[in-house]
Length: 414
Image (cartoon, rainbow, N blue to C red; front, side, top):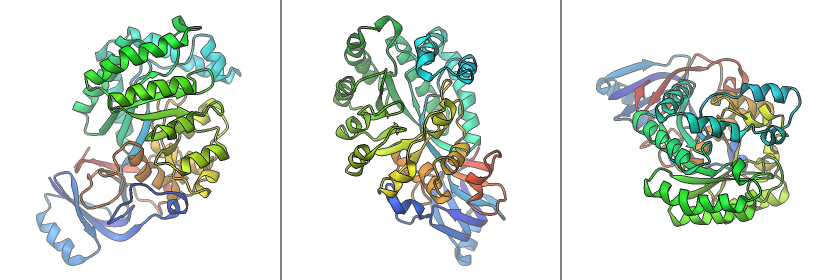
């Protein structure tokens, strides 16, 4: 398929030589090409520019022409943190939150992750796939071109494998770029209360070898936080995962200063995610690492948590990625346009910073920085064509509307 987009009002995130990520003051830099065209072939960005002679050449080659007058083109979003394979919603707990119960109080009453695990254990792979497929289709048409999906709502060997097999089916059928993460250490099952070490041993000695044996996961994750898994638990699980070729990612510091960020840095985690509780020590640790700090403002909004100190982190020189945390309990939305708006509204990030956070830095947090995240020759043609908009600042500004007119994945309009 040879496609040419012409009359692009602004082509965003244009990087002839793309960095792997952008950090600190670099996050305020968003390269833009006005009155541009973009040519793609066989799902790959082949050329772009403003030269009319080149435009005429590609016009003769293209099988499909798209007129983007008044519209912008940018890389599709990379959502590096979701849990979108789950069974059923949890709006009853939502009402409990409205009544004033905390996330931890709901969990102690059998709600939260344990509630999702109970429902998932009863669901079939077909049921899980069908529900997850609908969610994938929804987020794709809202602009997401790549998504990481975690297990973690099984908490038994069979159910964790079931989730990961569903993710594998999604990978095989969906045009989206999908990464799978094993999160057996998402919560301690009720039957292991008071004997957490035994569950950690189960994750290490049984789950990880079986996950790796079937090649079901790209990454391994642990919920390292108050009331969940300790830094010692986390280190043991990460070391076991690394032995089987699973690169670490970590849920860290959502509820307290847990030490999770430091553990993530120690084990070269690709990302540490949540980070509502981040201070000077955590920032310093991240500054000396290749780990991507990933903020999930949808979860903080939904749970009523204090927001992570994004401005302080950026001004210290850190990169930031933003992700949706799409899940039934703490962030029941995969709308990355909303996440961009929250990045600006509550995290005080500039429009160009949030665009960088959901494209080039999001790609890095998924290990896809060589393929996605910028308009670069040779990268995959995963693109958003916006509706007619006045400027790229309109993307996070208009938080209640869908600004995506077309989504192009692997050079094909979906």
